[in-house]
Length: 125
Image (cartoon, rainbow, N blue to C red; front, side, top):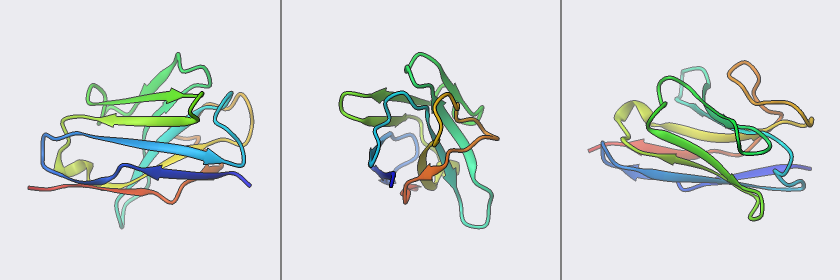
């Protein structure tokens, strides 16, 4: 059974930064794309970013482009979401996700099959 675990969330002031981490058990991230989504209670889940299996191609939602960076370290079996310039609209639970099948790229309309439990990010003064 594939399990994902996110970490790194917390409370940060507007303009601050955080780095979220995601790791997996039951299967490594190697050879699979990984993505980040976020959700606010009462709203639909929102795509944030994704990275292909090689780490060469990355994609971002317009709302975070230029502020967030997704990266991966397959040796450590980790995927990161570095977030800069946080604002109150970034407050949400952040989830990482990965697909069950090789060759599947995480995208806004193609979330993964495996999800973590989420990590809360709160941006507030």
